[in-house]
Amino acid sequence: MKRKVISLLLTGVMTMSLLAGCGGSTETTTSESSAGTEAAESTAAAESTESAETTDSADNGDVVEIDFYMSSTPFNDQERVMEKANAIIEEEIGAHLNIFPLADYTTMQLMIDTGDEWDMCFTSNWLGDYYGNAQKGAFADLTELLPELAPETYNRIPASLWEGMKVDGKIYGMVNYQIFGSSKRLGLRFREDIAEEVGFDWQSVKGMDIFDALNKIETEYLAPAMEAHPDMIGWEAQAGSNLFTQAQAAQFFNSEYVGDSVVGSIGWINYDDPTTVFNQYASEDFMEYCKIMRRWYENGYIPADAATVTDTSPDRQAGRYLFEVALGWPDDIDFPLDKAMSMVTDINAAPAVEVSLTDLVMPAAAGPTAAVAVNSNSANIEKCVELMELLNTNDELYKLICYGEEGVDYSYDEEGNVVYTDGGYFINYNDYQIAQSYDDEGFDRVPMAQNDRGKQSEEMYAVIYEGDQTAEASPLSGFVFDPSNVQTEIANVTAVVNEMLLPITTGSVDPEETIPEFLDRLETAGASKIVEEKQAQLDAWLASK
Image 1 (spheres, rainbow, N blue to C red):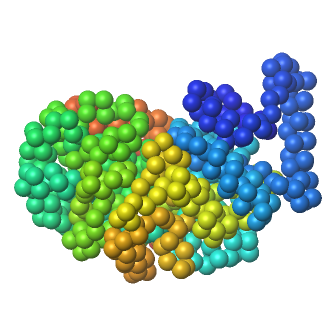
Image 2 (image 1 turned 90 degrees about the vertical axis):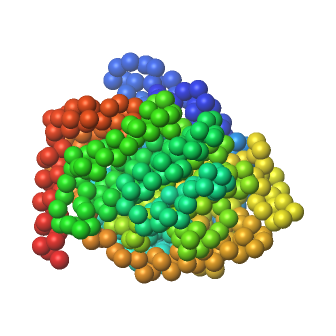
Image 3 (image 1 turned 30 degrees about the vertical axis):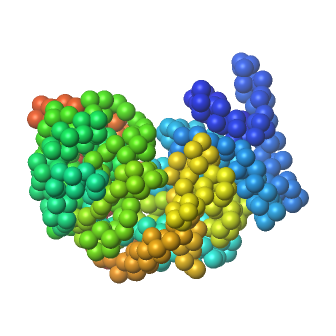
């Protein structure tokens, strides 16, 4: 099977990953090296023949190959684990799953835009542009197929989440419903041992305004902690804890994205004035946040290379961050639970505590927080939905793909804690991209500690599930933005944001000098037109209610 974009763009480690994922079955064509019309016609004919053969194979009951793309660096021992996983899949539904991790997920969008071949992919409201790709027809309409071919999965998901998946009344993806819930109450996570060492009262920031909290943390925690531990990193400014690139973090500012929340999106509403769309980068909050980041950068709390580092997982796994954004809830005041900093597998190596700052809200786009879509041009759409049902209902299969083999890739120590094997199969904490971690019978799809802590976790997840049923709904629930009138402006604005935002929000440049230039370039790119278009559509939607 030819994968045009992959063959052109992915090299080195990623190419090796793709070959491993294909199990060596990828065909190589020589027609692509020939010039002229004859070569193009030969390639088109080969693609047509291959598509017909795939369809015929499905009709004849043969094993159907399904290619699934997700955002991740390569997995250790993927071939071993997928061989066992596919033994289950082939027996249950007659399909063979090929997983392709993409370290640069912009490649996935390029594959979609150029009509390359793929069957399933991870998508969301923050990565993979669920709404945009659904609106332009790249994703298959699953509205009728989900209840028909994936009834168990479909029926366990709250109706409010399916509403959030709808685009013009139709559903274009499967919700990967997670045990950590869909409603949001944001907070911060601290190194418990270091906070105690420097005498920082982390509980005192509960419910605080974000700026009051950051300023308090700077003087009472970051300064003394960095002095005592100069090898630590104060704040992960460039990734998950960047409050203007982490989509959900708008809630820290009592706000929410309007219609889309991918990097580069312009247009928030404030919950105190939910009918008015504004450019978040022109807000006083943005300037104030960037001033704080600049101060932290100059004081050494943020690394000097923060604007250029793309993978912070090694520092996370080493427990080097002093504090970070916590997207889950409840916090350790309302529900104390032993935990570690993100991506740290040994709690004792980097113990953590969390405290909430915001109210509990069910965001408008909560449905596609994590989802899986099917290519509208796939020859195997129905088989893909069958695979979704299997991934979501077969716990053995889900655990195998997401965590590997028990006793080989993970085990339980004498105290019942989960221990992951060094060098074993590891999906890089991307299990949420595969399927749901919640099922009707509880929370046993995820390996949990077999002790009191594990029982506490199950109690906490039950609280979270109940919160999903009672959270205050976003004032934008049911609103879907149609970007077709401002596609050029969105592309231009995105280019400016991709170029300038990280240096500003990581404190790498002086915000008072750079933000005016940033805003000028956004204006030239069409930011105001995007805000105006969102406002017009929001006004029309509100009038129709």
